[in-house]
Image: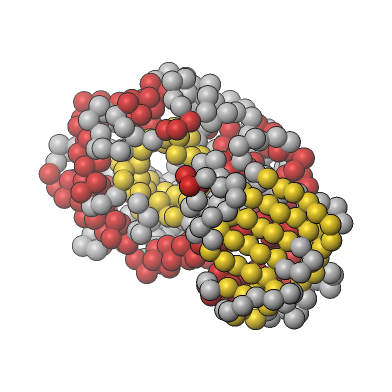
Length: 487
Ligand code: TNX
């Protein structure tokens, strides 16, 4: 058997003699029934096997999933998601210090099996895995994708599909951009007009839509079952036209907002001098915090071109504190670094270029100086909405060129921001803004295969040969029915 392509690339892979074949009699043995059931559900569609999941002693022929605090080659600092996969003629063992590591190991096992494994219908082939020992742990703790559900609305099914797709490549955060000028997308108790008037629009003038609290809770719960943390974003103080349509009293005096269906930015702001606005934000942040199990809440802060700079800085200082008061760590786009009074620990999301321009790097450094970490999303490398090739049918090109697959991993997270060391980089996130994205197929086309390069960069210490490795994985995406774009 030829050796498999693994992406993200693991730290250590040692091949040995022989192989293990999964058959209908294979048992999954584990004290972690949810992980066992998950593995069984991953293997079921293509193999057609309904593998039994049981606890107790393992024997020859079993797949074993177990917690093991001591794995040779894994330092304590990496324990949260580290794992080992050991395949020999007798058993497959996935052990890890924590459940998240076992889950990551299951994703590696998927890639050790033939690509047909990803098919939704049975493939009548041998499910043979070559003997190997893999020891692995991620470089960065935060490995994310963002989906903008404001410019075009996407609901629970599309979001859950994306969760499954990205979890397979060990991405572990999903940032949902829940509000923008074109639509407000999350129900907030006590503010019914947000989802009545504020949600009934999107780019191009479609119906829009929104997530109910129950929808959001379903997403968060499903994400957690895939070890993905949901990061909700309410974009403030700009990008707020839809909120102002719903509640005109939140707008600066004299401003009348009407539903917006275009794609310009920077024209809206809430009234940063109004106590009513802070009551609104307290309610929105409080509700979102109460239904979000993860530690983060994103407050936007980008492109607030209609807010006076002094007002912006005072506003951001206060909103980061409101967020902290509700028990969440605030994240803001890098512009929040123009405020020198951020709440403790406020995280910045850098969306400048790989080679920083104007104040973007200074603003990012200001966040670090104030004690915050950074999530890196350089627009001309990892923005998934930028076209993969010139004149593509969907996507934007404001970065000045397209972003082909090869450009996605062509930067070093440890050095793009001079003066910012790797130890303050929380991770990497690839945003998908949806001005031009209307369908789940459009999402597939811009997310894949480029997100694989993001996943590799965020996980692997020694990134190399990403493009051929992504190419080698395309049969797996085909089997999964992913309508990927140019590779
Ligand atoms: C900039 S990136 C924006 C978004 C747009 C995006 C399009 C950022 C923080 N703001 O409002 O959708 O460009 O690529």
